[in-house]
Amino acid sequence: MRDYTHVMALELKLRKIGNSVGVILPKEALSHLKIEEGDTVSLTETPDGYRLSQSQSDFAKTMAVMESLSKRYRNTLRELAK
Image 1 (tube, one colour):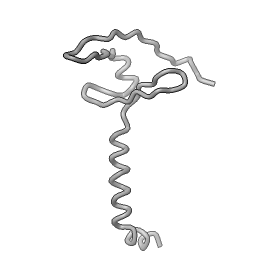
Image 2 (tube, helix red, strand yellow):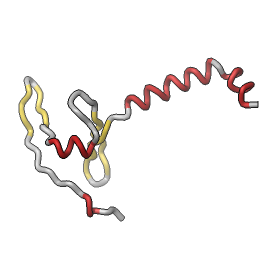
Image 3 (cartoon, one colour):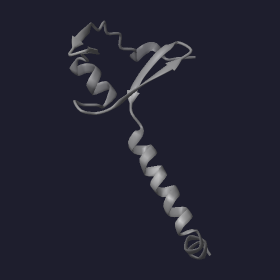
Image 4 (cartoon, helix red, strand yellow):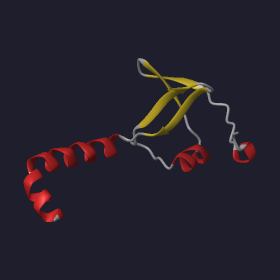
């Protein structure tokens, strides 16, 4: 069961930005999401609707580098683990 004691509900207005449409997030929402101007966010569909969160692209990039290194240095890592 979800804990709704800390739920933040904000009404946001869609605005035309060039040829696109954007959402302006108030400071409270930016602080809650731990994001700032220029950051990338992810919009994920959930059974309850949609969820906006910090993008995990940095984590994905880091994991890809780690996987590449572990393949390249597999034998060295194996010896170090002994």
